[in-house]
Image (cartoon, rainbow, N blue to C red; front, side):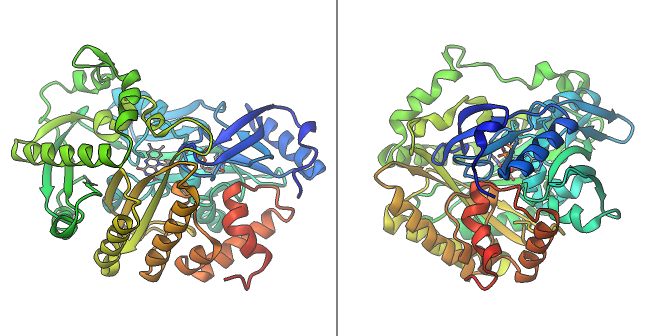
Amino acid sequence: MAANAVNDLPGTYEYVEGWGMAVGGLARVVRPRSVEEIRAVFARARAERVPLALRGTGNSYGDASCSAGGVVVDVSRMNRILAFDAATGIATCEPGVTIEQLWKHILPQGFWPKVVSGTAFPTLAGAAAMNIHGKNNFKVGTLGDQILSFDLVLPSGELRTCTRAENADLFHAAIGGFGMLGCFSRIELRTHRVHSGELEVRAFANRNLREMMEFMESERGRADYLVGWIDMFGRGAALGRGLVHWARYLEPGEDPDPARTLALAHQMLPPRVAGVFPKSELWRVMRFLCNDPGMRCVNFAKYVSGRLEAMGPPRRWRHAEFAFLLDFVPNWKWAYGRQERRGLIQHQLFLPQETALAAYTEVLSLNQRRGFVPYLGVFKRHRPDPFWMTHAVDGWSLAQDYKVTPSNREELWRHCHAVSRIAADAGGRFYFAKDAVLRPEDMLRSYPPERVQAFLKLKRELDPDGLLQTDLWRRVFAPVAADPGHG
Ligand SMILES: Cc1cc2nc3c(=O)[nH]c(=O)nc-3n(C[C@H](O)[C@H](O)[C@H](O)COP(=O)(O)OP(=O)(O)OC[C@H]3O[C@@H](n4cnc5c(N)ncnc54)[C@H](O)[C@@H]3O)c2cc1C
């Protein structure tokens, strides 16, 4: 399909970018409000041979829900919670319901989503299409593991209901299928019973990556959540030093006043730092630190304060605070620069247990040698799942935030290709929600070939005309789909 006749579709022209702001382009944006409207947009686009990119709230860092010069179908207005059963914790939602809407609806009833990302703003459809993971991936799996059923509007307009038993292939391919097989229009998922609006959180400082991995591995059976922060500027014996936050749910009776802590008012953090400075303006201050010397100091200060925190007793954190801390600094990404071609990219490398330490050590050293030190590094433990294009492995992930400027852009992309090669050589995988740089050859080396071929075959069957396309698809998969011998 060619991106012509774009003007004939309803909607408005907008600049549609990845969350990291570094990639994007002008597109026509259509916002359906019902299954009928999705079908109508699909029918018109089929007739006019215009490809469509599905989009939630655009929280993927790269180009996964972008279509420069094309048409974007934004489902975020289909955002009703259709049902929630407080006896079972099962929620049924329209695709545009956000994680924030869901937790705010269920927490006062004593439930919390089983899997959330580090931000509460994604839609459930976007989260399902990427099969997102949380800080508890090692324990409960990915979002897909919590989904019981969904409805998918196929490119033909047919509505198909999928469960683990009914249309099982489509169930396992569309979850994590980055919006290439159809449009989620209803999602039914399990949530988790909680007995308090707070978690018990402990902090542990680690002198290097090996120590962090050994610690997280030893706590895997005890913690409900584990997440590592890494000072990416640490060198030599301190390479990969950082801080692990360990958390567990409270047992019944441990919280003396659950009615109070489960209330939404308790979950909100004050909008001002020290009661004075508005958090909404913090990004302006952060802007002055968003360079190598500034970030070296910030990371060092965080490491030192982390060591002090680790000496203290366990603390109680609100669920929202622990899960979405960054959301409490509105628009922090603007510190990276708001003009076109600036911003940040995140590159998240998933590596199997056996090769992880050596490969991450190589990546951290290469970052420093090449002068591309990420300003934020986040480390997690994962476990495999049955979804066809999943990123999760029995191993680890390191998410790295790199600053993008017009002058470092080309060299940074080359650097990320070198990093991707190290990960692919080590049997690793990448995450399409966090990608702007992956090349088809690296994808082909990292995903099981039979999975990729099965996925492309299903895509050809369900979408023979290539109705659903994004910039990510055109960059990474279209060359492989067009030439199966690619790579
Ligand atoms: C600060 C921050 C922290 C994050 N932390 C994490 C984390 O801890 N773990 C994690 O896994 N991810 C994390 N993410 C990534 C984020 O959770 C995913 O990118 C998620 O997919 C975003 O959802 P969205 O609604 O914004 O979807 P979009 O980014 O708009 O789209 C994502 C994908 O979903 C597809 N899609 C959208 N709607 C539909 C639909 N109705 N049917 C079918 N496909 C559709 C799109 O085509 C695209 O491929 C984080 C992102 C940010 C910005």
